[in-house]
Amino acid sequence: MKLPKDLFTSLLTTAILIGQTLLAQSEEETQLAETFEGVWQASFPESGQKAYLILKGNQVASYFFDLTADNLVHSATWTLDSVITPKAIISGSLGDNFEIFRGAVSYQVNWVRQDGTQVSGTAISVPDSQVGKLSVPPDEAGRRNTTLTAAEGFFGTWEIQNKEGLPFYIIVEDNRTAGCSFPFSSYGTRGLRGRWVKRGDELHINWDSGHFSILKELPDKYESIFYNPGEALNDENAGQTTIAARVDFRAPGIWATEYRETKPTYATSISAFRKRSNARSFYRGKWDVVDQDGGIKETIDFGRFQDVDSNREDGVDGSWRISADWAYITWEDGLRAVAQPIDDAFAISIFLPDQALDGTP
Figure 1 (cartoon, rainbow, N blue to C red):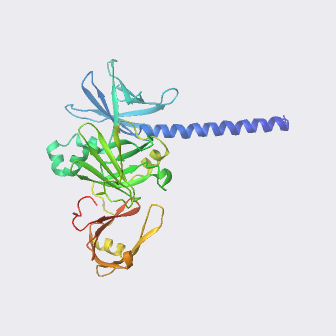
Figure 2: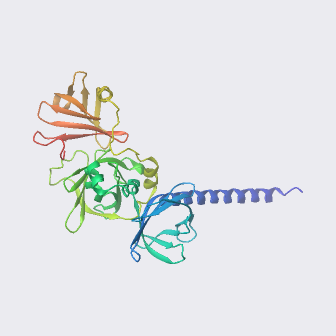
Figure 3: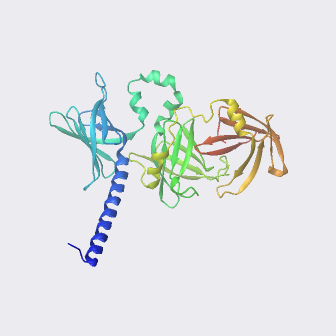
């Protein structure tokens, strides 16, 4: 039987539209599923218990309970239910079943125990390393890396309000890296990438765009100071000071999805070069220092015999040396500088003669 041409065209158009709709739905569900992937700490105040739920791709999951005699990890599977409220449904091998979903102000979790009783609680996303620390004595973990231990209170997602009241997000990772959805740069949906150091009660983040952030804890709130490239951190009129709040949900938007897919997976010690000689060879030659608009502000020439010169102020000479993957510069006018790799970019920090190189630039 031969279909009329108009009917055939109509059926073909309908099939294409259905296919496009199904593809869009599939992509949306993939993004929803990615927001649930990772490690979740589920707390149940009623019973005083905590469960750790580990959700991976391909519907693979596992879970275990804190403060048990064996801390055994049990296998599970999980699926995404996006019909009404998006939720992750976890089915455990021991008969435990969990549901994670976004509540009014935080993520919620329901736990149906093996005996059929049910309790409810809250769920927060935690770093992968948090799971491993459960089997390590606290004093030994502190001896292994006191810096990471001291900075634990800053790990997670932070919501920052800009002067116009619009939020952007900073994610602080436990491998000394960070990501930011700062919307006022030329980086687009990629956002900013950074490396952090703990200085006293503050967390300082150097971003690959030249921006600089300080997160600090005050008696009754957290505060964020965001500096533009080229601003002096010791200038009381520099930087945008706003309120920062740690949130227990994952940062939203296209930026967050791209960040999770491309974020660095360094160990706790970040090094771009295996040997100091490799770093020395890499830095040799001319480097352009650019502003946030891409304009060249200065050209620095790293010489072979640890000499360095710049076209700043009609020419300034100095010397340079390597420490790990950082290049330290001492200029004849007393200023000093540190060039360091951040993700796929390099940032340079300037220090006054009386400033310590391991302090605030």
